Length: 158
Image (cartoon, rainbow, N blue to C red; front, side, top):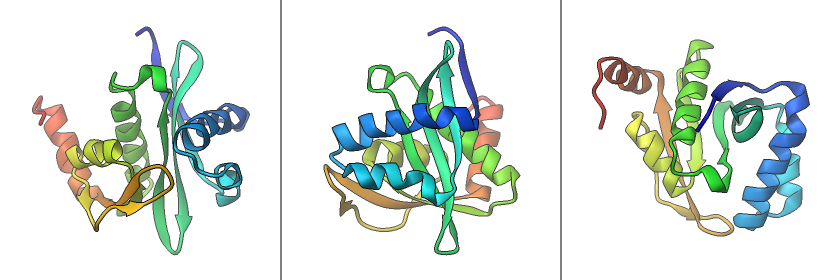
């Protein structure tokens, strides 16, 4: 890989973000297109992983039901398995907790559950069917993520 940049999304990134969501959520996971494109109505904060100037990953957070939700977490299929998603997730969580958020809720696919679990996330229920596959409710608290971050700074990994 060449240069990976993790950053907050800009308004002009939204077309690329939606295109990535359509590729993954609609084409791979069979989520209806109208549900995928309704994303922008949630007033989300978005982040991107950019590789050599091309957006190859994205994640978002939004408020729903009085709770901060995190998701819309994607890495381009051709680049999965290279830890881009792990880096993007950690970056977004650090930014959200720096904003004063105490806990983050997500309904995650198995791969995301594994990534967030290594960062201190806790499974909060059984997987439920969601289009092609299942999603599992997961919580990540500021304290658990801080422990993970400290371990990473100390050179420990699990």
